[in-house]
Length: 495
Ligand SMILES: Cc1cc2nc3c(=O)[nH]c(=O)nc-3n(C[C@H](O)[C@H](O)[C@H](O)COP(=O)(O)OP(=O)(O)OC[C@H]3O[C@@H](n4cnc5c(N)ncnc54)[C@H](O)[C@@H]3O)c2cc1C
Image (cartoon, rainbow, N blue to C red; front, top):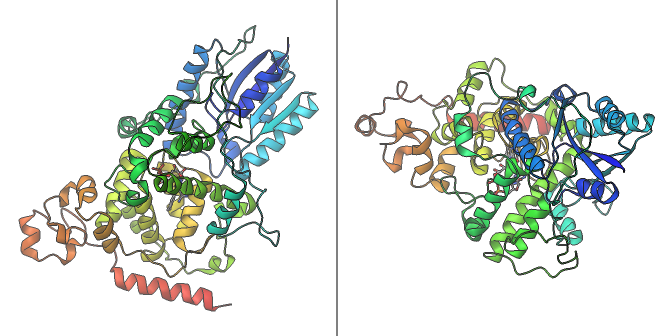
């Protein structure tokens, strides 16, 4: 009887899990294990919202594995030594896992390979978290892509619709007593109960991921292309935390888009060569959605090739950018949603309450922090990292580098989002701002996105005293924009 270990990290699912499928094909028994080793990921160890998600996702996975006859072994790191020890305890001949591409994870995987080789245990890793493996696409000159559009064009040439792998029907248990610390021992949940809003908004785990995908395919995908930029509407998928934790693979999503969300094939079902059905919903909606998955691919590709970008600008000229000094008060106001600029504050309060923020608003709050407030973008990235349930080093890094104008893609540094115009365009009825800023709810639409310009009588009639019920803007939008542009010019003209 041969035994293998399945090391789960960033792939907390049973369906379409290539490492699991390979292990099951070659061995009689497969023991799934998760290691909590946050110290190995410093300085980007999982934040509070991620840890909350991880607790619930692992609990759901444990229950699903029990349903198949086995159980999830949970241990605390270091991973390399822990896996070698577990192989010795169980007599496992091999360890399988799906590769990850963040710098700390790449280093951990190298250490695991070394420790297993020393212990005489074979190791096999496979690709399961992306559509295209980082490192495989290059420009004609042989360099990594730095701009999205040509990257995505090249990716589409190699992408083939592939059916996802089915979940196993059973997982034979490994005999003997293998000690598991159990999920609660990881102490991932907050000591102070601030997580009610997260619990009300999300269902972590593979079941929640599939339900979310199904709900998206049933309706919103058809109007995704037209409505995805409007924060008050439930027009996007909200799959980001599920994708980040690997409760769902991008291949499952891409296949479901193509086949209308039917179940993955049964073990005896159609082969990989099966003919995919038509696009579900409107074709353009599905294509636009796939393109957003392309941004996820691009983000992982950029971080893989330029690992320093998690902490420093991709464009090195911006290391000399004159950030504001002594910004603690302004940063705290931004974090708490007290900047006096309604769209920014609504976004920051949505983030605090639910662990998620609409993409359009993420761009606006990030631009406001890095440009209008001239606070280093890393401060914003760190706050997102701690508060987002979908905090993802590749996507977060790319988003902040893009918004601060110092990173990948063709986003010009001189693009400064105007939060008033963005609000009037993408939240014209004010539903989003009114939801998150009830203190402004009675202001007429016309003034909602810039209450400081409303006539005093209008504000009084709406029960808004600026500086008391709601803050005055931290900075003048036009002046701060001009200052940011001057600072950027000083940097770009210097060379
Ligand atoms: C400053 C900033 C920080 C961000 N930080 C993160 C982060 O930590 N984690 C994260 O997953 N996304 C991040 N994003 C990207 C984007 O905002 C979210 O992926 C998206 O809002 C998630 O909502 P959704 O699942 O409904 O997206 P949908 O519109 O339904 O898109 C489907 C999926 O495509 C991917 N995707 C969509 N847009 C992007 C994008 N611009 N970049 C990379 N992938 C994308 C996500 O996996 C998403 O779940 C950030 C964007 C900005 C501007």
